[in-house]
Image (cartoon, rainbow, N blue to C red; front, side, top):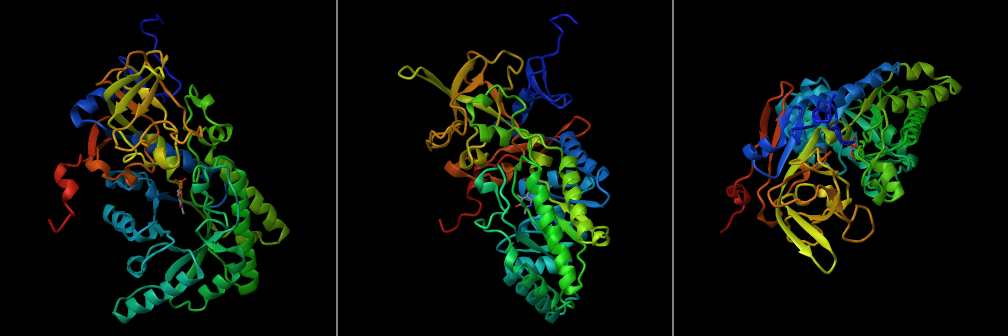
Length: 479
Ligand SMILES: Cc1ncc(COP(=O)(O)O)c(C=O)c1O
């Protein structure tokens, strides 16, 4: 192959999905610059093919364990209706965290038996909606919440509704640490989630008191998001397994499922050219490349060993495993295209500043967790990246920057891009598909961006229209 025709394959590229074509970023063969021309900037772009590939990668875990696995996409990661539809069409189930997400899941076409419902502070109305729909499981977060579910069944029946006993799963908090951000760890006793190990048996006894109203069907732990190691998953699974055996021994009740939660990590550092600027623990966490098959294999190995010792293999042979993956399905299937709107030099520091139109109001994690999203030039994707820039968003807040304003080094101080970036150049923040669109807000009166899904036939589909100014005031009253 001559040098002229040799394909440029930067470290961030993913064959068939994220590529360089004609020096532009191409997403499933669609030119990113054309997309911005058509749909304006900033713009979220998602890939149906990548979502399906990510789901298929998770489903391969089914081949290494001898128990059925039910995958419930954690819709909090991104509950845009077209994304939910894509997940539904790919053949998996869904996890919701509020009445609103339950409404969306049902509206898009998930059957009630495909839905599980988490949440620390469910209202009576939300519990009623879940009970009425007859969903697969309400994951209860405290002993008190079992009372609420029981009351909901009684209330609905008193209103003449014919509701089945509510299926509940008990969410445990077993004190398992991970190497993720503290804000993303959810199995520590200092976290707000779940029922303490010391209360588990009481909770199960309470749950079993009124089988006409409540059916206790499972046990649940979510160790946290972006968990880079196998061990916390295996430890969590073992802990749930041991509780399941104890419950059986103490009450004779056999649980149907063990829910291992979400947390399979995404490799945010496929391109490691700026990774040396990150602290080592951050690098390990963000660059994790953990195969779901490895997680499931180890979790089942540990549980089987424990089952053998307890002479309880027959119990293990009855369970279904639930997983609640969010990030690992949608994070690297989405990116943000943003345009440089302004440029300035600071002769005193020697810095060149690029001011973009994508702020933390559309990528909240970049601000609250100092989350690293790799930045490239979509206009000149194949050129050498040789110049360091300070990069910032448009919001009236010193914290709206693409580096760590608090100087804790959690983000690189500079972003490396081609020479001579100028206003009008389109940049792309990669791996932005999870916990971004779902967390957007209108700060500074900024209309929220459009989102496009590149369908598997390679055609872009508008899945969220850009806000108008009218959208900014649609809920304001009294003026
Ligand atoms: C209970 C529960 N399940 C699943 C998830 C999804 O986690 P992830 O997106 O890391 O897969 C979360 C998010 O942290 C969660 O709180």
